[in-house]
Image 1 (cartoon, helix red, strand yellow):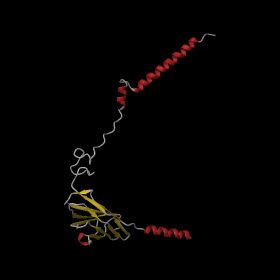
Image 2: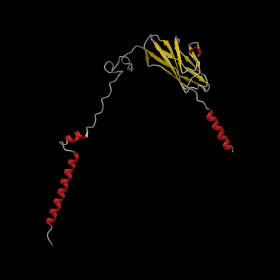
Image 3: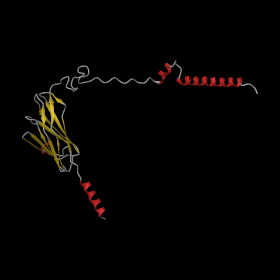
Image 4: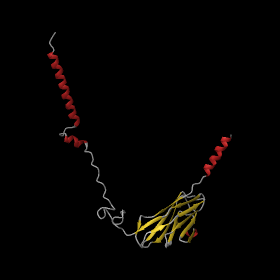
Length: 212
């Protein structure tokens, strides 16, 4: 009886567990100097029955110029936002298991470092570690194949594909190399010759045996 009660309690605890959402920050490997950059915060495993809050640590001297949320139950004007001390926060109710926050910033001429992104929902909290974005013009030799670069203009960034492996010749070609005669016919002729030789040898031995 006690074991049954323990199993029931454990089952109820397992069923009551709600996993916290996960968030990722999508950045390109490089951005042009003095350009506009769109940063996406991808949310998965969200719980539509509660709110989720995200707080982004922006690069030094950078401010959010525009933003949008896809997958929110509220309209944009009803989403709670806050900007203070280089951090920008959003709070909204997901309409499903996934949502995307996209915000735009203006870049300068040097690399930018994004700080820690923290997020909260009713199941717990999590974070996305700091990331640094390379801000530089397209340059051959930076290990990024992009823009107008290709294997002809910048093989260092865009290596040429390896040549295809040589294919085995088809059976017809092998037969042609054997003199135009099918391999099966050649094997048959060889077997016939061996049989004829064996028969001749046997007959010859019989003829050589003296009569009793």
